[in-house]
Image 1 (cartoon, rainbow, N blue to C red):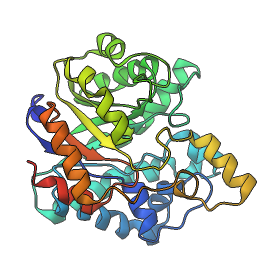
Image 2: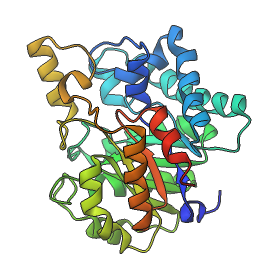
Image 3: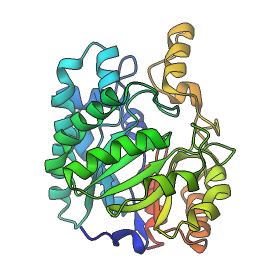
Image 4: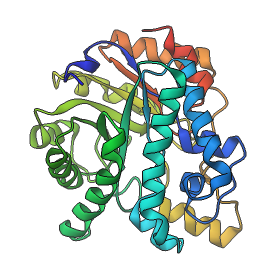
Length: 306
């Protein structure tokens, strides 16, 4: 693919995991969407959900392996399925593309390798190996890698060392808090200066509320690269890290779905999401999409902005 792909408005997909759960996926512990890759009875549901986003107007779909990272498979006692699950994520995305007969692209999800929304402080060699293992399994099926909800410069640099080795371009997705900084307390500008890469396709605010996206958009605009967002619609503007969600689930008996803890906003209709996205385009954004609780109807609503 060309490195200027995101220089004009492109539509990413929405939240695969939460959409799967809303469509009937039953899971255990912190497997969440990874259960759909391990259990064969859900395989067609993954393909169909990718197709829902493609048919809604997405130019890009992201592989459904966000929760299939090594720490999750280990803590749920299914690590023997790690290779199988990540390979299936690539296969299902490619199958959906082939069925659609549309000229879409596939981004390979490389999620934060420990807990989401917090900095990974583990040994660098361990973190790099975790990134490498997922990237190596996804590479045959994807056009680029997507650094999926990164929380620090450190983990972005480690992930970029892997994507460079794989010789594929990369879209960087950073999580940003209300203070307009990464969870590591580093600024967006600091991150860009240290992680600027000739294979970088752009930068997006990843799994961030529309309100936080709106107050960080000017800083992203000043970096001089394609930028945008994958917005979430959690009720909590700063979502709890996965390890805290799991603890609440265990202590209070909630189901194994993050929405039970974080809640879902009902105020963001497709029309409202389109209005928000149009406003971001007017501020220079060209990469539009959704994360948790963004459904196909949201993507359909913004597809007319292309």
